[in-house]
Length: 431
Ligand SMILES: *Cc1c(COP(=O)(O)O)cnc(C)c1O
Image (cartoon, rainbow, N blue to C red; front, side):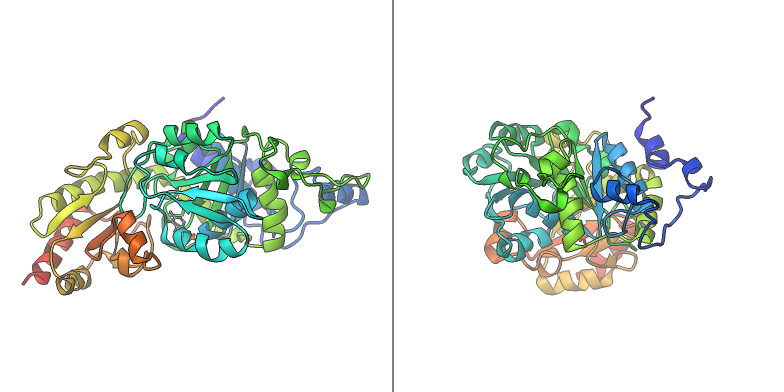
């Protein structure tokens, strides 16, 4: 029977009967797993079994997280890694190492904007960033012969914009390349990118999946229908000795993981040799967070709407960037793609001097001044000078970020208390 989202988030991927009837998912705090017989060892080393062997590559607690998140998206495969940045860089390396290109929107997490030209470029991944992702055709115009993927974010950070996913997915598929979506800000509760054409989805599980601001973690999910055997992805077809079968025949990634080659490769190669493994304890904390995902995110959405309305009518605010703010041009796309709401992350343009803005940020009492989002605690930040400080002035202009932009991530406190907190901070800043 196919269960609905809220049942899967509590139950999927775990059977107590297979774990000494333990009700709560056990934390398998162990490095290695007994191989038992030499025959079983042969099978494990020939990648014939899913059973864990060594915690850098797989672990039962981490596997429950992977299975649960895959079930929430209705897909075949997920790999958990030690951070969102590891999820992004492993995905980029798996698809485009040795000179491939990734085509991206400029509205990306600051670490991704900076990671592409710096370390990923050194590792042979080139990238192209279009200027105006609201025009989906701009993606098409910038696809080159060696472009291996389009990479976008669902709800962009910090300006909460929404793209036309299905149009962009169609363009990617027309050119034989996969669409990769960073779905961190939306979470699977608000948006399942696989239902709208995505082939690979990455998360910083650090944010709303965890929800409590205490774990760094990442996830990579794969739908398992994209054809990597077209000749465009030769690295997936190259025979590798370490993937040999029992008769010592080297195998390619596609032969070893025919249904899900990207996550297969990330586990067998990137996790194995670059090593950003998620700890079992951290996987356990993310599982706890996911149990309340819908409840948390739906409250954050309803509080965000109230706070957006308050800011929209505030003389010290020039504009609010949120799909349901006054004059937003993203409302229709949000209505289409985000029927459960547009999340708890948004920004506004402060209408005052630099000094007044700084006073305002320092005057809030409830909001934390931190580089994080999706927490149970509400957060405030001046992104151009902090979280998005890596952007060049030109990139900042392209993304629409200014020195007056203030980003809020709405938590689970009482929304009226949050509005009162902002109100008293405006009063102090403009006194
Ligand atoms: C935070 C974040 C990341 C990076 O995740 P870490 O877990 O901090 O490495 C990537 N993408 C988005 C959208 C994020 O918000």
